[in-house]
Amino acid sequence: MMRLPLFEFRTPRTVEEAARVLDGEGPSSMVLAGGTDLLPNMKRRQQGPRTLISLRQVEGLSGVQWDGTGTRIGPCATIAEIAQDTRFRNGGSALWQAASVVATPHIRNLATLGGNICLDTRCSYYDQNYEWRKAINFCMKKDGEICWVATGSPKCMAVSSTDTAPALIALGAIVRLRSRGEEREIPLADLYNNDGMNYLTRRPNEILTEIRLGSLHGWKSAYWKLRRRGSFDFPVLSVAAAARFSASGVVEEARIVLGAVASRPLVATEAANALLGRPLIEQSIEEAATLAARLAKPLDNTDFDMSWRKKVAAEFVTNALRELRGDDMSAHRLQLTQYVLDSDGN
Ligand SMILES: Cc1cc2nc3c(=O)[nH]c(=O)nc-3n(C[C@H](O)[C@H](O)[C@H](O)COP(=O)(O)OP(=O)(O)OC[C@H]3O[C@@H](n4cnc5c(N)ncnc54)[C@H](O)[C@@H]3O)c2cc1C
Ligand code: SF4
Image 1: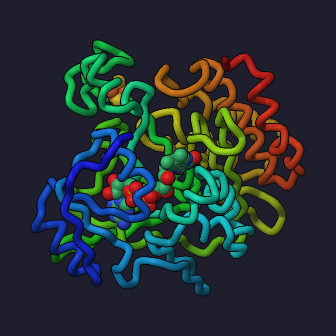
Image 2: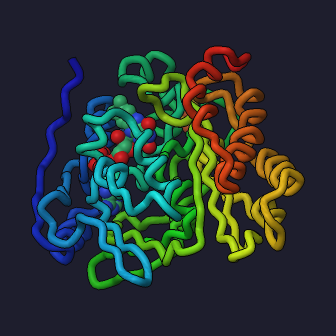
């Protein structure tokens, strides 16, 4: 049985208090939300904070609020709440589709949106217990010096595996970060580094306190996820696409984001620009899919053959964009598990 190491547990009641405690405890402390990622990581000795600062009793960090200008989501809103909120089913479809395929129903009830956004990166060599990693002499992400995926690499290439971040970035999300005596807002896209160890630009003393979306009027969005098991599994490739259409169906704004093919969600700007100024016709969809798939450089550190995952990227961008156009893609979605079984992805 894997046991948690000893740690001190703090339960602040306000954001100010939480920020003060986090700042005072320094880098040996971490915030805890649902604990569905951090606690297993601590059991595997991948992360070892001496102090955990629980956000569960902090006022003002939960819930979803809508007004005419947009949506404010508290970082402690659970993934289940997002998946069940029917108000996201118009422009915000990508977010509820992403939330509804995170882990299992039981985990979604505990897991939070903030925790999902800040989720640790993953790698087949890292996501093992302590003894397994010790037997191969660890890797640079924790306790070692070498990268077992690319032994000459100076940097870790563990994979960003959050489902909701690509969807939120496609919807143009802004996040608010709070530290002792300071507050700042940044586009969610700027929260990420393409580095498996330093994957967040969040400073160690900052708490994510709000996720904001602008008005979704005129927007359509979709999220497609590749995973081995249809019941639950982390993504090994995902595509989030969002577009704002004029009354006549011309694409006026668009974003395409790839997940799980790098250490951060990848924003495919050139691909999205290829959609602008015309309706979503097959030609523009094909151009965008080709351009987006060029960005995907999956490595051999998650499930499936990496070149097959790259091929699927183009297919999923096509599917997501056809869904935005209004094509009925439900049969394709239902067949995803069979698609994986029939594939040559191993
Ligand atoms: C079996 C299993 C399957 C899973 N499948 C998926 C999946 O398919 N897709 C997926 O995306 N995830 C999956 N997960 C991972 C995890 O359950 C989710 O990502 C979840 O949303 C994490 O949220 P949490 O509240 O539990 O985060 P926690 O575990 O509490 O925290 C995760 C990280 O975020 C930090 N953090 C949390 N909240 C904040 C905040 N407000 N400010 C700053 N830092 C913060 C923590 O310090 C920690 O580093 C799975 C987990 C398990 C155990
Ligand atoms: S990519 Fe390399 S350094 Fe990073 S977790 Fe995997 S083996 Fe370790």
